[in-house]
Length: 386
Image (tube, rainbow, N blue to C red; front, side, top):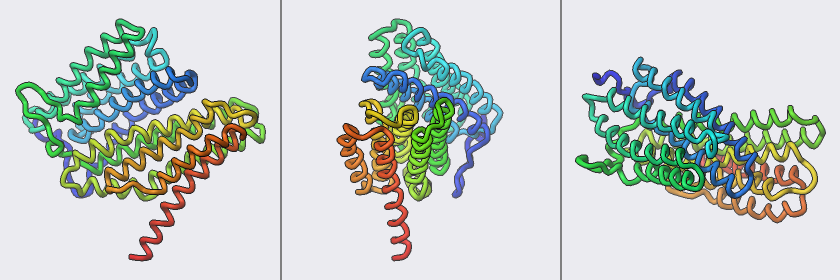
């Protein structure tokens, strides 16, 4: 394969191709499945199992994003590869509700098809280029983890959980330690000559997917209940909370971070830290917030349960912790308003002992909006001072 399949590099960055947007539709379904799974199993075990599956879903999407960052997604061979990955993704997403039961092998098989099948394809497609060595390293590590995924699905029970956790450790550790592989030198981030603008835009789109799913959940929950004043008020508060999360992420930070990674001397390092790893708590925070929204719309009054308090307050807190880490990775500092907001959300846990869910949800929404307004005011102040 000639170098024509390589994604072109330019000062403005490569655009996101329509096939990539089409590919993302699978993950709208996957995120919905994860939020419903968490809602139905709001205990410590359910949270842990949902986290394992969420990390697998994110890793499948992220590795595909790295592949389309290197190789031209509009090339016919890559289009066919992405279509095959979509099939595996749909099987994986459909199996999510019973991934630790009767559909374990379907989930593991779909996941392995995505990870190993796609990596074999891009390794072949990148022959004759310097990228092939990068993909060979990745393939070796994904084959090792594939054995753990399939073995776990076959044995079931506690052993399945242990083996799948081990598979995640293998896969998540690999980029951090440079994919050490026999007969090949250890990979370093300067080898990963990614298009920073494309990477940033792809992760922004995944955040939109997660936020879009939260909006769909709130709308569907309201549609399934009586339109009482409390339910409608909870719906409005939930929507405003989603807008606040969007505002915090997209108002200035997303664009500035995209510019920073595009101009970086080592975009692979930021791609690994700020986007591949640190986006995880932000996405998880949005999913948890959506579950909290659904609980509040269904029961806006009365006693606030522990599950409702933890999701309504913990979701935004997790998002803000992730966003603070993101700013630290890209810009080198932790914003104090994020720290103050997380502390305020934790303090609201005391209020949850006496206040109904709608009050707690409103307070959490106002805290996130406080961060968004603080950011906007600070940016205007800096602009005026310049």
